[in-house]
Image 1 (cartoon, rainbow, N blue to C red):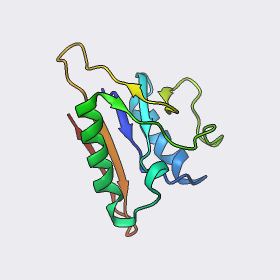
Image 2: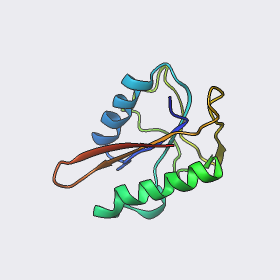
Image 3: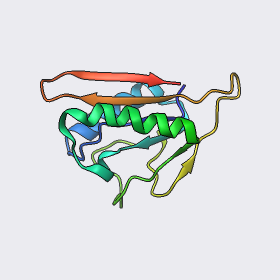
Image 4: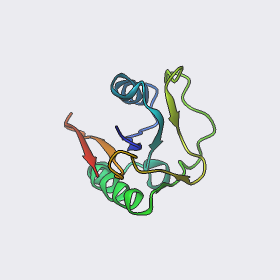
Length: 123
């Protein structure tokens, strides 16, 4: 039950559809999930990508807003978004806490060069 998720977001034809597809399998019935990608601002930072994603999400949760994905004109056509209510912001998007417990939650994905995959949820 996340409000947003920071994607590894490499911008590749293979990786991005797999990453978003996995989120869709888990959160397919969610509404308004906001997908961010820090790489649109900083480029691929190699081993620091996951740590920077955690830092960005810490700021997102503190400010209750997600910064835009720079240079995003349209979603990769290989990403199946039909029926998946997500936002890929082109401007700042405010996020609202869950009504049940007044918390904000965000996920962070990171994939290492060695094949290591990590997913963390911050609240």
